Length: 616
Image (tube, rainbow, N blue to C red; front, side, top):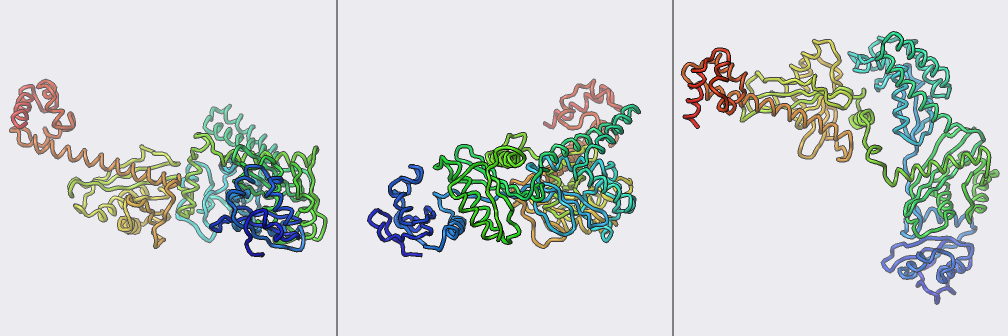
């Protein structure tokens, strides 16, 4: 690279005539702009004269630039590649910047396993699994997949069957979402047959399954089995949604990379779809910044294509397609074509189709770019609100759980300076409070301020009762506190003989999650819906425990005040407590209202009120 020259008309004679790359820098050395030119001197002079770029950019560059550096290369192709590489490295403020977004989601079915699983992934691997997609919306494909899995009984757990086997089936079995092959309640052959039908649907053969589900739905309705009919209706919705997605993403043609670009104001997005054998097998999207100074969308497209092939890189020539389909022309299109052809060792054509299947593919890429742009610019509050299933799957990923935590129990201990020690257990089902499963637990051990021993007693008693009931046990137990409370709960579970329950503790101070099998606490981002769910469970357990503690404390105060009244023994104290609940409400009652309490008369009511009035 040549030495830095002052940026100005007087330096033009010192700029090389050859092909290469030029770099404008500010006085402090910041890289402002990187470009290429067949003749570097002519190219830089065009900028100085304001002829080859939007006026806004030229004026600002002329004001800020202090020096220009040049690097001569052997050909335009080399200059194109070097420019893309340097832009990616330095990210100059006046160049269009492309930031990689995650690739679109696929459905992965682990057919290489004895009991295949199906889940969403953004990475495809050649390990024997089958992949379907890509799909533009992870929310839509997740909802469709969940409905299909529910219909065909595909497991959601992550056990490595048959090597890993839990001691009991999870909630999915009890609610009819899975046949529990993990505990051998469903045979491998039966599960495989079901998986084969599931794969046919994913492969696009939806019509037969739709007819089967529709017939079963009408049959259930005729038998007044409306719960079954509703489940089948949901399955139909999943099949319909998946059929629409399949129609969109399977296209005729050969091997192409298809580009789409969209912009709105100061934002822009680019998408490239990889079509191989007529099917979209992959995609990448990029958000673009620094586009406000460019009126020509061809510039955006050219930068997107250069980024895809030279900054991202196609490491092997076999990765390059036979055709590159584009929505419009741009200045370096022919140069791109020559460069890619040389790299591939064969012809790589660039085309701008106007009609037919290839034009439809370009329109699909454009639609995906518009969708990516819409996602980048923000969605409505309803769209941004996470679905319960999405949150549970995220929580499963964050905590590396074997099963989706559809049942979560939260524990907390509350006391008043070591007295009225109580615990609460709150149950969340599918991410929502299940108040029928809430339990108060009076701690009987007399541990006072020892929260660890009180927590151990609460967890032990809860799980022993739950195991004895024969119903599904919570998949995740969350205790309020840190590593000490977690250790106490872990010991309690071990002594209760309960297995396959994951324990976690959530500390209030830094919202750190402690897990039994991790030495270091887990830090979940504060904006994560998974963390928000854990906080809700923790806070609800705290609220419920505190409510019970206050109730017991109120009863103690009431008993102590009433116990001094002559003729009011323990039974009558309990009767007043049951009827009024607090001393304040007893004081507010009339003698007649107290007299109607079993064991009392109007005269006794008057005596109680007189006694309480004297002690105000």
